[in-house]
Amino acid sequence: MNTKQHFISLFEGIEQSDSPLQPVRKEAIETFSQLEFPTKRNEEWKYTNINPIVEKNYSSSPKSNVTQEKINEYLLEQTPTNVLVFVNGLFCEELSKIEKQEGIVICNLNTALEDHREKVTKFVKETTNNKEIFSVLNTALLQDGVFIHVSQNKVVENPIFILNISDSKEPFIHNGKNIIDVGENSQVSIVENYHHIQDGTYFNNITTNVFVAQNAHVYHTRLQMESREAYQVTALNIHQQKNSTYTSVNLDLGGGIIRNNINVDLQDSHIESNLYGLYLGKDKQLIDNHTFIDHAKPHCNSNELYKGILDDRARAVFNGKVLVRQDAQKTNAFQSNQNILLSENAGVDTKPQLEIFADDVKCSHGATVGELDSGAMFYLRARGIGEKEAHILLRQAFVAEVLQFVKQESLREKLEDIVMNHF
Image (tube, rainbow, N blue to C red; front, side, top):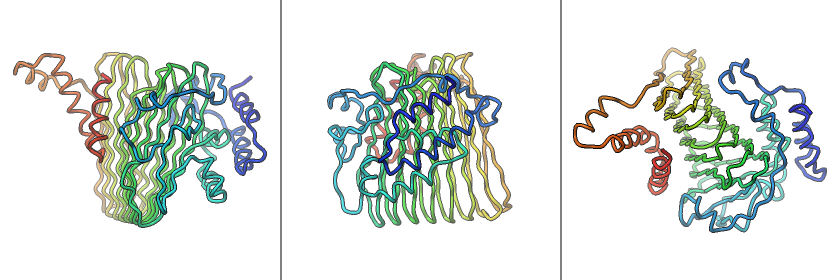
């Protein structure tokens, strides 16, 4: 059985003729059958070999009996107001906590499909990229996901937590789709968290679409701590309107092969978009970040800072592209990728890109790859600080530049502890 046929067989095994999404899913699997998985001959995938991902034989998401005590270990806040818990991609209502608020919908995708059938079906169909094989696979094998709708003029005071737990010894695939729709003059913070209980092999194929309306503000934090034998391919698509702000802080610590595709569509003027990322690689991990920011209109700002620390034989890829179209005058675009290699066998392939077709802009980009600063190390050692402690201080200073953009202080402190204990 070839790799594509295996995924088609999975589709046939979970076919649900009575689901309102079935026509969309069927169309997606037909498109999937016409596409090919990318190889290293493809420019966008030249440094990432996905054969280990697609050649596995996966089952559908298995059930797991995870206790509340276990869930509490992974919560980034002791008493979250809203938390949606998924185990192996399956929504666990009994482990979740959702506060009802007027004008705010927080639920899993399947529940939203029951209550908002036409709207959710339209979202799923329109957010499927028929040119991307992992996107159509995500729709064809879609199991569940998150649906968040914040109507206009609403401020969600506390972060909404999305906790994804993987727990299985058998290889399985999870295809989840998250839809976050934020209305005019509204504000929300989203915190995604990916963890594992067993060191198993599994494949999380996740698509997230964020719609930020005029004068809305979204803060999005994501922590990925998958099994070292696991694979994750994510697509994060941001659609912003006039005077809106979107800020993401993306932390990748786990996984065997991780690929993040982030696309930002600045649809109007006076928009601010901020992408911050931190990746820490050990052993033979591969962490690949591809970002694309499309400046189509004037008077917009984008800031992008990705930092990585790699040890052992770990590798990272950073490909960041900023497009400034002809009408996008008065654009300010900043992009930087900085890397520290702790081992001679670690490596990074970095390619920041600017394509500018407007003449009245301020744009810059750059990349650095090096070791810990020997001068700073000497300075610390000369003042009686031990070598191990000096290493910790320098790494802490390096990662702090990214973590400072986490808005909530208690969450930022928790993430700082997780990152520093990861070394």
